[in-house]
Length: 366
Image 1: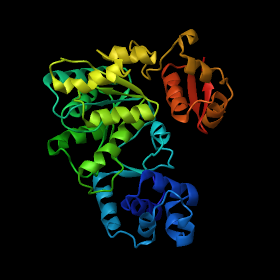
Image 2 (image 1 turned 45 degrees about the horizontal axis):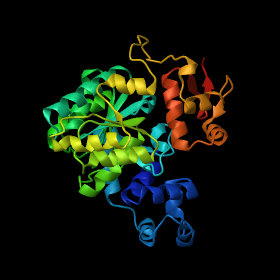
Image 3 (image 1 turned 90 degrees about the vertical axis):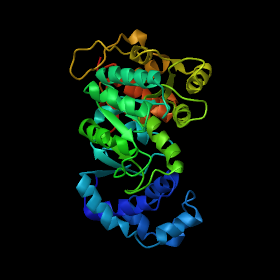
Image 4 (image 1 turned 180 degrees about the vertical axis):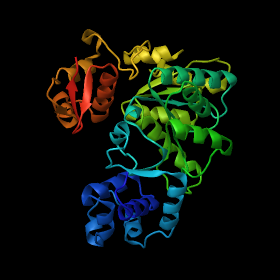
């Protein structure tokens, strides 16, 4: 969330420049706030290596006239802007190489969304692909995971519907503005998603669903998730792009097999050949994470014998006690990549082995 209208206007102005995520984050890292970015001189901006000459010209240009309209649209939608520096920004997403500098949000993000699974697949999915996506999403949501998908036709729509039918949380990440219903037939679905989760986008309000926006959208789906499940996909598809991002971000990749005579399954089969975990049911994913779905506790905390932890989980757990240890210290002491540490900490929280405390630190709970 943003503190006041002046700050909000500055974030909206920065967003409307549509700089690369790396450049926008570099500006915030250098100057601290968007207001300070726009107060910087041309010479100061030239020292930001990630910012191109064209990007520098955008920063030095006049504020976008659309900012006033943006404020009205945000109020009409009861939507919010969550900057990368906000405590409400998704923890998992903040750990990737190029997190969006702002997220536009309809509905609400929640702390529990860090326990999320991405589910993606073909827009032209068969009855099989849609039904398996809905069933697995339903069961994972019932086990306490948030389902993250892209709001598109086919598998994405089925995944959101499955989570909603289970009474769980789901997040739709759009490749357009949050005020643009695309595909249009999912307008009511997006309203339902907002009631039990959130519709989010990094793109400015009013942004149309142009093809170039979807690959960046896909990195957000995987970035918000512990892993990505591909339910049905041909060999060339956005779902495989999402799986690729998941691998780069240190997230797990899962795939559902299908009829070998249907080309819509070939992408999943390729993923399995390349090492993705074969999935037939939600239980396969829960077992891979080392958690149980048979939990009656309302908070769905997971218990586990420490001897059953993976090597990475044991490395992290061995550093923790009843005294808080910061995530930066854990990264330094384990020597593990930051995304891997982040995902491992989240899984350990799900297993009720550790607990996050203020200051982005962790303690043992067993």
